[in-house]
Image 1 (tube, helix red, strand yellow):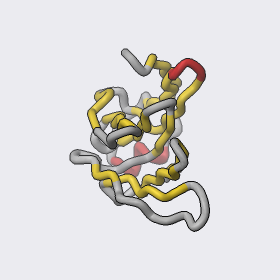
Image 2 (image 1 turned 135 degrees about the vertical axis):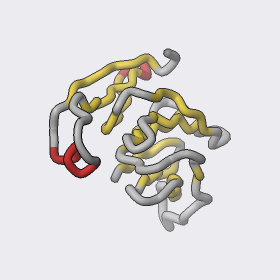
Image 3 (image 1 turned 45 degrees about the vertical axis):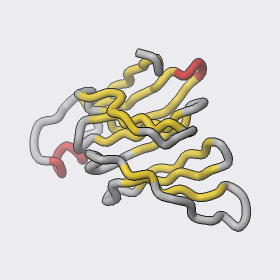
Image 4 (image 1 turned 135 degrees about the horizontal axis):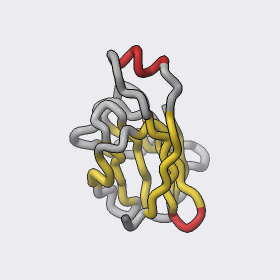
Length: 123
């Protein structure tokens, strides 16, 4: 679903996994220890800031933050309905937020209605 790089590592999220898969970002691209996220249900996207990773998880309605130095995980933002996540200048998080959440999960996935929300990482 998404990939990001930070501190010479590659981080990958897959839709059905409840952890982040981690690789070295240089040859031989060794797989490192996974980062489990207790409560992660269906990751959709991942982005890297200066010192943290951010994972959007629309199924749990959460943006998870993972600290790069110790892999500490916290529920950074909940209730936003964010699908996509990106990090812009000055550690501003840019979220693609679904605005029509009616119907089943499959029906919502077919609806492209969304808007952009911007947050400061320290908010």
